[in-house]
Length: 149
Image 1 (cartoon, one colour):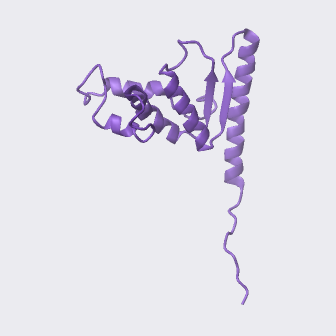
Image 2 (tube, rainbow, N blue to C red):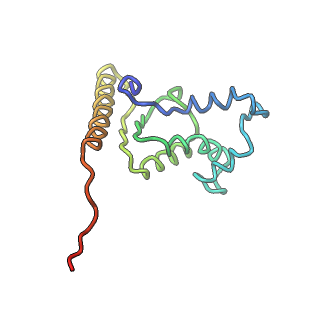
């Protein structure tokens, strides 16, 4: 849906694929470089469990790049990327802290709820398009102050 509306989805699966298929990574099944744990320190303190830091090394740059986010709450275990509860909480914190548009929706459990979720997502994405075009159409304001002598 995101691509159909002209946006680029930033998804963890693409980042994981890079880690799994990169011939330079020489430590499968860990699929990390020496820099990964260091990157994770930007998003999680040294006292945080290493698994959370490792996940945040991947999630953090995606969050930094995002211009908007859709958060699916209460999704079943097999939906999307599964990490751990602490990583999810930390990711939500960073998304909200960024101040970007965020749509938080509950995973649908019926056909009617599914239609409602799709409508909410479409409305959210359409709103992003509108706000982007408003920003482009708005003329630049002159911020210079004139001082009278």
